[in-house]
Amino acid sequence: MALGVVVAEREIEGGVVPGGDGAEDERRRPRQSGDDLVRDHGDDDQGDDENEEKPVEKARRVRSTRRLSGFPDLPVLPVEDRTIGRAFTDEKTGKLKPCLFVVPTDAEGFEAKSIPMEIVSPELQFQVFIDDVRLPADALVGDEDAGLVQLFAGLNPERIMAASFSTGLARYALDKATAYVKEREVWGTPIGAHQGLAHPLAQSKIEIELARLMTQKASALYEAGDDMAAGEAANMAKYAAAEAACDAADRAVQAHGGNGITQEYGVAGLLVAARAGRIAPVSREMILNFVGMHSLGLPKSY
Image (tube, rainbow, N blue to C red):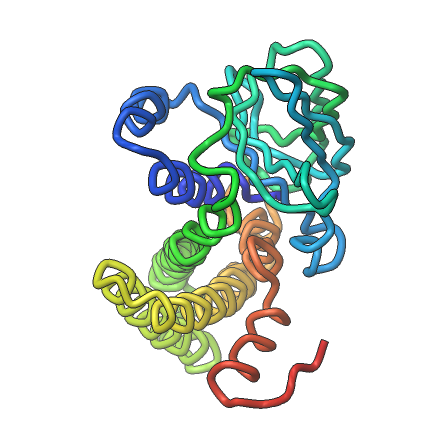
């Protein structure tokens, strides 16, 4: 997931801690607060949006240990100390089911390759290969029969985080554009005095504030424990914020004219960063599917 380090680690924090008992929480939390626990949600946003149902890792129990195998062709979070991988196993039925494991990144059979990215970011992204990695019994997070619940516990915070990222990026782009059109003068008049530039920027301001309000609503519903309402609001917030960010970045580049595609003014790179919000952690099309089905009661379309 291209934005995994931004949103997925917060999502997994929501998935790990609720899944364990008090002792397990204490064992996981210090590493989280120290930023040396790396989270791998295991999503492949380069493929289709239903990969949640197509697991690529399998785990099997060997006495008191577990062995994890799989070759997920996906970008993940930077490798430092440990990663959280999703494994899928059911020894009784032989069917796949989700579980969460903490996997040391220096374990034998664990390999990570850096993925060149177009997006400008201080974090690296990796492709992970897991080949018969042996794990201790306590590598399992929470209950092996509650893996799906633990995974879903992080979906709403994930979308709220993604929405916040997009609205922040949008505000930055709008601030850059506004400052430029106030200062740049042609024939003695700031170019911001012309409606052709002022109106698109004003429109972005409205779109950003609306997205921020929906993000705040989603956060309030999540804190109140209303998961269903929070899910609807979080999806809407994520959609609105990503659209606002893409529009704001595009308008910022346009407001700068030729300067907008130079490195000196630092706005062209926002186009790629903003566009990623439409793709990850859930695509705009899947959000529209959710709203169509759950908000409007329409038949499932996929």
